[in-house]
Length: 82
Image (cartoon, rainbow, N blue to C red; front, side, top):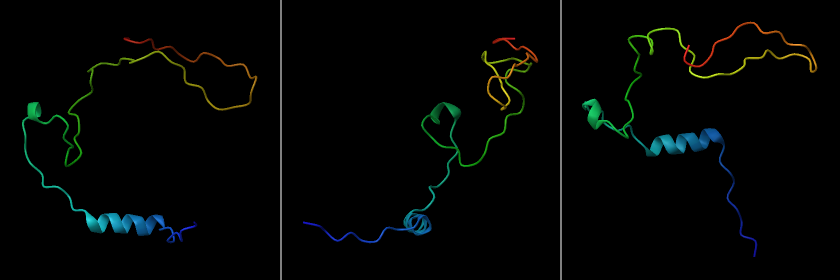
């Protein structure tokens, strides 16, 4: 049997339906040690760079888009840990 399918919702209708059914959770202040599996209520900004010196986290290559089969030149080097 072919059941009659209800019309599909638009993204805007689905978003409105969801937003009308939920409400934000209350915020609370916790020590960092008790905050596991929690979500921040607002953005957190670092007070400085980590680590506090220039350091590459991993080896890799950065390539600009261009035509295939072109010759690429090495512009610089930054090895992991340096």
